[in-house]
Length: 291
Ligand SMILES: O=P(O)(O)O[C@H]1O[C@H](CO)[C@@H](O)[C@H]1O
Ligand SMILES: O=c1cc[nH]c(=O)[nH]1
Image (cartoon, rainbow, N blue to C red):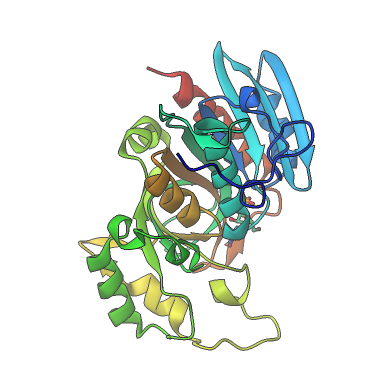
C-alpha cells in the first residue's frame, strides 16, 4: 500500500492538515463552503451548538449543529486555485489516515454545498435571485491537470461551446462538469437551475473593462447567446467548476448556489447584498435538514 510522503501531504505539528488547520474529527459530512471568511460567522450564527472553530489564512471553519444536524462551514477565499487546496484537504481529512499516511479502506462521501455570490448573464435573471449551478463551465483550467478529466467533462457540450465561441487557444481549455443530482433535487424549490461559468478572475476573465481592453471583446455576447439543448449560460462566479469537477473525481456530492448580486446585461447591481445572502443561508440550512 502506498504511504503518502510528507512533502505530498503536509501535516502540521499538532496533527492538523496543512492549510485548513483542521483535524479529521473536526469535519462533518455536510460541508457548507463560502468564499468570504466573514460568511462563516453568519452561517454559524444559526447553529444551536458550536463544536470547534479553526482559522488559518483565508480558511476559517466552524463545526456545529443546526436543528440536530452536524455541519461544517468553511471559507475558501476566492478562486479555483484555493478550491484545489480546500477539496483535496477535505478529502484527505475524510479518506486518508493522517497518522498512517495511507488511503482508508472505506470511502466517505462528503456533501459540499457552496453558498456564493454571482453576476447574471441573462437579462431575465434579476439581482436577488438564487441560481443553482446544475452545470459548471471551468474557464480556469484546474481540472485539466488531473487524469480522467475527460471522463467527467461533457465533451459534446465542450465542443459545441468552443466551436461557437471560436475559443482562443491561448486561454485554458474549458471543462463542463455537472453538480450532484441528489443535492440539486434538495435545493430546487428556492433556486433557478442554471449553467455557470467559473472564471479565473473578476475583471477581464468575466468581460469587465476598466482600463485594459479584452483579448476578445465579443466573448460575453457569444456566451450570452450560446444555447445547448435549449439551455442558456446563466451566470459568472469563480469556484463552482473546480468544486464540481474535483468532487466528481474524488467521489463526493457537490452543488453551488449563488445569490445574484449584479446583472451584466441590465447593468444593475446590489449596493448591499447581505440581506440576500442571509436569506440564501437560511434556505440552504433548511434544505440540508429536510428529508
Ligand atoms: O461571494 P463568493 O463566495 O466569494 O463568490 C464570488 O465572489 C467573489 C468575487 O467577488 C468570487 O469568489 C466569486 O465566486
Ligand atoms: O459579477 C460577479 C459577481 C460576484 N462574483 C463574481 O465572480 N462575479
